[in-house]
Length: 222
Image (cartoon, rainbow, N blue to C red; front, side):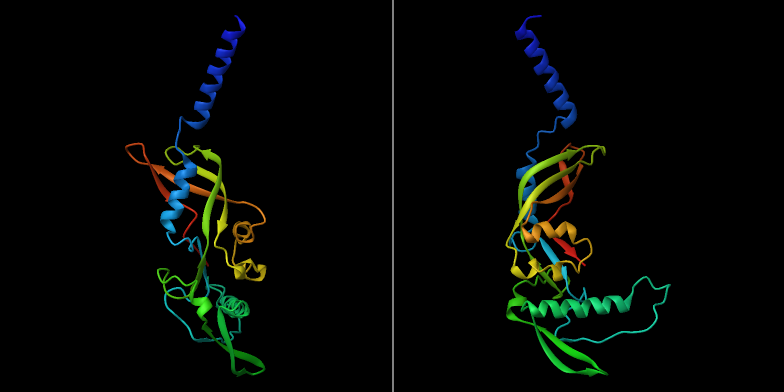
């Protein structure tokens, strides 16, 4: 076999192997995922929404209170812990100028503060998210497709790296973003120190086209 035939054989083997690994998927995922994020976040300021207080209704102005006592082991919701978290959130967001903070009295030796949204805080509210108890920000900008995972039949996952635009300074405060569970997945995006990683989950429709099941933009973080 001459050298030319060897080259063609090697090339053919490489193409066959590549087609097996990719499942002959020629989708331009970088363009598609960017478009999906932009559709879910047309303003470019709602990649992430952080819950502050009650989910289903506006709650401001709001005066804090303190809960103490024993936790009912049968109650899955730790009211005392959540009350402490809310009081801490309000205090930290007030330091960043998103709330006013007014001392209105005492509960024994504990200060009672009343909080209300500032004009700055209102800039980040999104009423589409269950009332005025959240602060939203950010635009996902796709950098690179890292992996197309087809191990689940008809349910591909696409892993990609991205950076985030329109990130306000207040969320870069670790005291704030670390309050939220699983903040590690958010830290890279909000600090900009490194690229973040995201996953888009798809399912294949009967005609073979893909339907997005879950993406990155539009997350409501409790």
